[in-house]
Image (cartoon, rainbow, N blue to C red; front, side, top):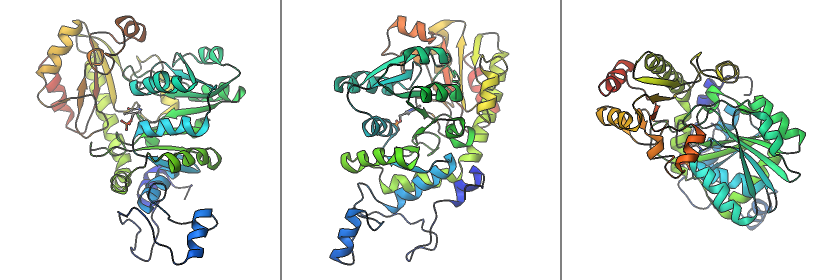
Length: 387
Ligand SMILES: *Cc1c(COP(=O)(O)O)cnc(C)c1O
């Protein structure tokens, strides 16, 4: 099915006829599977016969989600997890060992920074954080023991765009893998493996679900790399539930139309914000004013659904604007049908010191909006109330 477009794969792949269900879309809510004979049980456990064993590491509903997402990303294999963070943890635990080194973008998800620094650091894996937009910093940070480059593009909340092809080239020159957290784009807007990346990570909790219902995650790549990731899952058990897998499998069917709508809304809102006198600056990769606009338009099909902007009035103006909204949800989640509005400096990035925030460009007047699927005129009016 690899010649089909992602929109079609989202709806048609991962479905197999089974004796129980014409389309193989049933939800398998069982913890273990029964064998026909002692010999079959032995063959399943040894791997000689493919098939289901125990739901910590085999379940048809989970496999259907993995197969569909892998087809959409152009990956040989996907391995699903209970959450995006579990997927990131499994990538490192499955592919790295103590004494090895990670080079990561400075602008990655806050819990990923905590995981790399405070948890992996305890077990002898060190991380160096570098600029998402300067590949030469990545090259300079490489050590003989560097095994993994880790990037998120566009970044949160400033929507900085990293040159995935350039980072892949540097990683490969030094015998490291490039992992891309593709949560903000999904395969509909960006396919990192096509750009040279080795590993894709998803928090399926966001756009893949798309309606704020369940948590989930996935890691995708070659069969050889995914074997290590899967072995960690099988042994350690951060397993995606069958119910959540079924929700996410169905979520993929509408992902393409949703991503187009989120993107159209975000572009319209960003364009409108740029014309407001109270707004100092708008951060959106789809705007010609964005510093990496040309790269974003080469690498992505749209600017995505996340817009950030800085108000001239600082924190007071930002909080006033947020508190004046009547439609938008004040929350840090994203990828939902509901538009969400966040003040990063006092929420998602409040664990950083003021100096770290200043260095990262997270000013007190900064607001992030994850544009949902409401009518754009209602969203503009909601912001206009507090401007
Ligand atoms: C939310 C998020 C994660 C973590 O995913 P969970 O499903 O919440 O564990 C990782 N990366 C990015 C970019 C995210 O937005």
